[in-house]
Amino acid sequence: MQSSTKRWWRAFAALLALSLIAAACGDDDDTASNETGVDETTTTEGDTPTENGEAPDGTPVTIGIVYSETGRSASTYGDVDSVGEAWAEWVNTEHGGVNGHPVEVKAYDAASTGEGALAAAQEAISDGVVGIIIQDSTAENAITEAITSAGIPMIGGTANSRPMDTGDTHWPNTYFNTAPSNPSSAAAAVLAASAAGLESFAAAVCAEVPACAQAGILYELVAPGAGIEYAGLVTVGAAEPSYTAPCLELINLGADVINLGLAPQTAVSVVEECALQGYEGAYAAIMNTVTGADFEDLGVRLVGGINGFPWWADAEPAQAFRDAFETYGDGSDIRNPSITTTWSALELFRAAMEDYGPAADEDVTTQSVIEAYHQIDGETLDGLLPQPISYVEDGFQPLIKCFWLFEMDDQGEFSTLTQGESGNEATGDLQTSCFSLG
Image 1 (tube, helix red, strand yellow):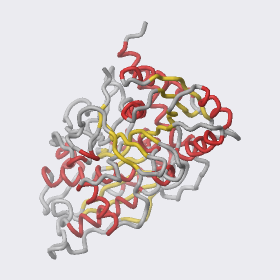
Image 2 (cartoon, helix red, strand yellow):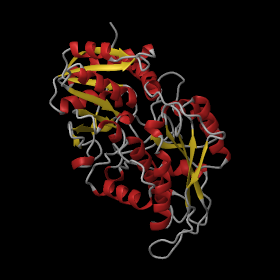
Image 3 (cartoon, one colour):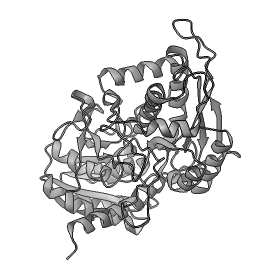
Image 4 (cartoon, one colour):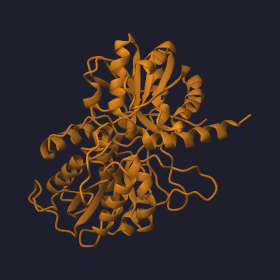
């Protein structure tokens, strides 16, 4: 019989594969990438004076974001560039830059492919960025080696590629993740169902990759501890001409919540078809699958967990984010964890540079960024991060095991759920819940 630990890691390995294809499995909209991979829209470099009349006059700093503006993942990640632009203008205008340095954020389109991601990363490297935020799990696997060998730190975003802490496989100590990774994130749906008072759990996962079905291993392990009955799993092919058959299979499992382990467009289609087949229960969804624009008008109850702070939160740090985006943003829809994980990653960069970075008259380099991040200890950004973040100079960076649980009612209104003690020391609607491997 397998030990509990081995079963965890078997589930973990399967869920890494699941996370890599989730965004690509269900979107039928393929848009051609641009020739260079770089989004030419960039931010200001601090030429606008602050409210007290002082413009940042230090040496300039450039941060890169590798994301998917085009291709299959665009519906999930396509507006990430807008938050980078808004943040930089807000910081340069109202805060005198980052520690006196005018900051620029450049966005590079990975086009939802590994090849596009590598081209985007190479463009960012040639532009001299001092850190890269990754917003597409396909991009992450394609570029980790390239940016690490170039000495450029990964400073947040959406990251799932944390290898097992065994053998010769190592997560670079310049890989500064700011959001939960599998298997923690995949357990959020089960914990959310429990926090919402639901009793039985079924799952729909993509059929394109056999490893997706192995997510059931994790659900079997997590459900009993959460007080949830695991009813089973059904695979769903994104290209199926009809979702009637998988919906009937899911309904026949008799669960009162169906987890949508699918890309947003496929998930929405499954919800619509299952309603036609008479399903009246709740649904669950996690992390970057959850977008307000996709789910709010479906008229269903949705529970789950997200890896970025709740865009609906009343707490002051979340309100400051919304105010800044209203003033400096381009009107893009911010109800998306890809947006909030980008904002919190940028805010952590600002905090690290202001506390530990070079003075305004000194150059900010990749090495000075790395050294500053290695001094971060117990940072929560007042609830914008899922748990107190501490980075280490040697060995593995810590696994982030906390996330924000939520419930959306049938009117499309989101609210925060909690399970257990606060994972990030926040209270109210920024409080996180956590998962343990046991």
